[in-house]
Amino acid sequence: MTFPYFDTARDEASQGVAFSGNRIDRQAETRTDDASERALASPDARLLLFSQGRLFLRVEGGEAFNPYFTLHDARDFAPSLGQAVLLGHEGEKPVLAVPSAADIETLPGPFKAIDYRSIYTQGLLQPSELGALAQGAALLAWHDSHRFCGRCGHETEMRDGGYKRHCPACERDHFPRTDPVVIMLAVRGDQCLLGRSPHFAPGMVSCLAGFVEPGETIEAAVRRETHEEAGIAVGAVAYHASQPWPFPYSLMIGCYGKAESAAITMDENELEECRWFSRDEVRLMLDDRHPDGYRVPPTGAIANRLIGDWVLAP
Image (tube, rainbow, N blue to C red):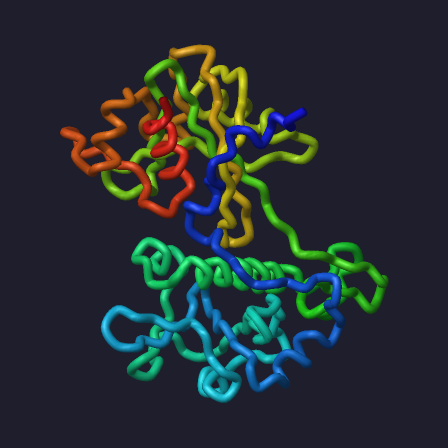
C-alpha cells in the first residue's frame, strides 16, 4: 500500500524562497553552555557580524560579497563576543552569529553593512548564506528583546550556545521563539485574491497575511485573516510552502484557500486595495507587463512562489 501524502511531492516548494537554503548542521543534541566559547577558540570559526538589522559584507571585486569573517578580521568591527551564538557547523567549521558595536556608517572601503531585505532582493548572497543570515538574525533579535526574565524581571544569562536564556534568580529557562504567520492566496475558479498594503512599493499587490493566534490552527488562521481583511469566506485550505522570515523571527506559512464567496469587504485599516485578478492578468504581472502597472513581490518572497505556482497549475 502506498502512503498517499507523498504521491504528488515533486519538489519542495519551500526551497524556492529566500532564507530557506540553510545547510548548517545545528548539532542541537550536543550543545553545551560553553559551546560558543569553544567554537570561538577554533581557528576555523566563521563569524557573521550583525548590527541594527544589517549584516556586514566584504566586497570581493565586482558583485561578489562574502558574509564570513575570521575571528582575527572580526576584531576590527567591535564584536560582542560574549553574546555570540553558535549556529552550528558547516563541515568541520563552526559558524557563529555575533552582534557588532561598530559604526555602520564609517566602515572601511571593502566592507558594507546592508539590511537583510536588500541582501535578498538584490541577490547578494548564495542560498545557504541567506539561510545562515535568517538563523543568526532571528536568534540575535530574540536575545536582544529577552534580556530580562518575564517571570521575575531579573537579568537573564545566555546558555546552551545561545539557544537558551537562564534566570539565576528564579531558575526559569527561556527559549528562542518563532512567530508563525499565515500568508495565503485565496482562489476562486480562474481568479485569485490579491491586496495592497499602504507601505508596499508602487503598483505592488500580494497575498493576504496575518499572525497565527494562540490556540488557533493554521487553517483557522487562514480563514479568519482572509475574512477579516477582505470579507471573503474560505473553505478548504491547503499548505504549500514555508519561509523563515528574520523580521524579526517569524515563519511564513504559505497556503492556498478555496474561496466560497466573491463579494469583497475590505478592511481599510489594513489595505488600500483588494480585488480579484484573473490568471491571465497575473501572468502579465509576473512578467512585469500588466497594462495598469500592477506587479507582484520579487522572486524569493513566498508570496511570489504562491502566486507563480498557482499560475502554472493545470
